[in-house]
Amino acid sequence: MFWVDEQNSGSRTITSSNNDDTQEILAYFTRSYCKNKRGTEMEEKILVTGGAGYIGSHTVVQLLEAGLSVVVFDNLSNSSRAVIDRISKLTGSKSLDFIEGDIRDRTAVRHALRDQKISAVVHFAGLKAVGESETEPLKYYDNNVSGSVVLLEEMMKTDINTIVFSSSATVYGNPEYSQYHEDTPPAPANVYGRTKLIVEDILRDLKKSQPSWRIALLRYFNPVGAHDSGLIGENPKGIPNNLMPFIAQVAVGVRQKLSVYGNDYPTPDGTGLRDYIHVEDLAAGHLATLQYLKIKPTLLTLNLGTGQSYSVLDIIKAFEKASGKAIPYEVVGRREGDLAEYYADPSLAEKILGWKAQLGIDRMCADTWRWKKNNPAGYSNIK
Ligand code: NAD
Ligand code: UD1
Image 1 (tube, rainbow, N blue to C red):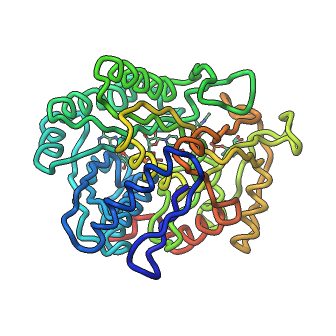
Image 2 (cartoon, rainbow, N blue to C red; image 1 turned 60 degrees about the vertical axis):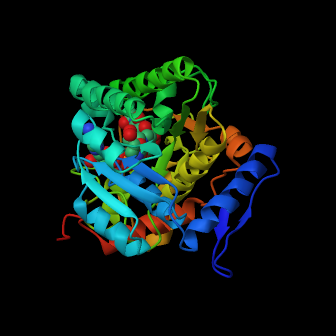
């Protein structure tokens, strides 16, 4: 993992692993990005589709802090304009632009890429609700797959050939072993997961036909947490599907109690085990990936996880400790499609990028709680 320390000198001190590629990247990073902070011309402008969303917004903050310029392109279907104001406030950066647009809108995408002189794309825009993807599959294929094709076609026309794509551990489906390696054969068990795998396949085919492309397929495990300022965080609409945002709503009093989906799994306490990763670590993984792709015209497929798994009861306990609030819960039946356990083998990302998740479960809960306590209604109460 790269750690950038600007506090003492205005320049950056970077520590990392002993991997040769990583050293090369670090040397490049030190040479190029240090210049930017000293006030010379910005040389990189990144288009971040879905940059107003949960993971996108945290990544945008880190890109800006690294001295890059950012254009957020988002249709706000699952986010708010207020996020952009919060990012500006947080970073004080003048290098952030926002375009309200849909990735399926070819003209809007073309203008964004061409007029803004973009050098690379980080592609978060997508729909992600597993249940909804089963009941409205065409909506998911259209948004996630067709939208990505439009984006790639327009990138091709504008000679932009660097893309980091948000994939998911969901692509693995239900393999024989709980620890997922990048070479575990993918077999997604739901429509959402299939849209992710299809876009991965499209990108692999694109790379075969156009070797100059620089592509990263990042398979996220379970992103949780929030920026430690408490200014940005996860803001699900309606009843949260995922565990951490649901617990946060119980802690803040929006929901009465959590339903624990099954305590009869073959796990130590009977509840499901997952690899939760702090969204700040995830964001740092994107920065490290962009830096790597700048040096190597390659296609990377990487797990972004911690390699450690926690049970539902572990998370409840950790959240109670972080918040000082009791989390009432009731054990109910298993949720359809849930697995007993899965977690990442994160070693490839460390070997290639020198990136490793740093933040543990206590920080994940403390930061989620700070965000939720300060913003019980998310962004919806912000003018
Ligand atoms: P999010 O919903 O908070 O962010 C997605 C953003 O994309 C939203 O701001 C939304 O308005 C925007 N968007 C959606 N469709 C769009 C379109 N057609 N055009 C323009 N903008 C559009 O979700 P997130 O949790 O930040 O996830 C980001 C990406 O990571 C998604 O692609 C998701 O599938 C993937 N992912 C998320 C998780 C997770 O648990 N959060 C896990 C694995 C992968
Ligand atoms: C879910 C999605 C997965 C997606 C991931 C994103 C399903 C079937 N899978 O996975 O595709 O990539 O989110 O982070 O929807 N739990 C409860 N009560 C709740 C919510 C969850 O007990 O109210 C349990 C679940 O049974 C599971 C654990 O908490 O054991 C984590 O659940 P969740 O946060 O939804 O993540 P995943 O199940 O990993």
